[in-house]
Amino acid sequence: MYKKAVFSRPLVFLGMLFAVSGVAWAQSDTIATSKGDLKITPLNHASLQLQWDGKTIYVDPSGQVGGGTVYNGLPKGDLILVTDVHGDHQDRAKVDQLKGANTVVVAPKAVAATITEAQVINNGEKKTVAGVEIEAVPMYNLLRGPQPGTLFHDKGRGNGYILTLGGKRLYIAGDTECIPEMKALRNIDVAFVCMNLPYTMTPGEAAGCVNAFKPKIVYPYHYGQSNLQEFTSAVQGTAGVEVRLRKWY
Image 1: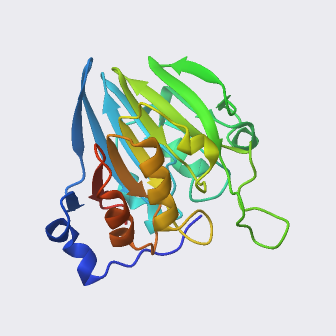
Image 2: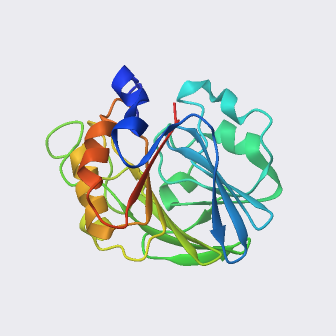
């Protein structure tokens, strides 16, 4: 779920204020793997593109945030991952735009009710698609919901994902609070961690989870109006964790 992003002047200068990668308006990062470089490109809000080993992978392509023009002209995907049913993650039109003749869509059962061609994977399951090792992991709310007794994201409905690409383990959190399953993660090279009230968690809560599982690199994403300075400050002192702030809006 989404609240509109607002960038204040202090945010622009985060790179000067902290010993981490600053807000980068260039769109791609490259990470070396055992099978060539992995190129990471933020698209919008909860969506990203991964290019590796001749393959193009999309996560949660959606036009709900920013109108979706960022997808114009992008190559067809070999693999499209969808995490949940909300419109800022599941978008039938954008999936169709990025699909080619051989594209595989992977999603939880709840998403497959709309994107019917999706290969279903549920929490705790693993599969290899197009040479990419995929593990579905939980994403859910502990406390937050639209009204007492309900949650924005029920346990088991949506998926986070762990992808293994050339020996590098990437964690895509999806919409979640700081759940025990996230705290228990180990050996994560790159993590994409959400924050955005009221739907997921605060920057401080997100930082607490990151400090528990200690990915080598963490990208805040799906952050809306969240205070990234608060997140960065809380993670900054954790040995071995690099915060990378990139443009998602």
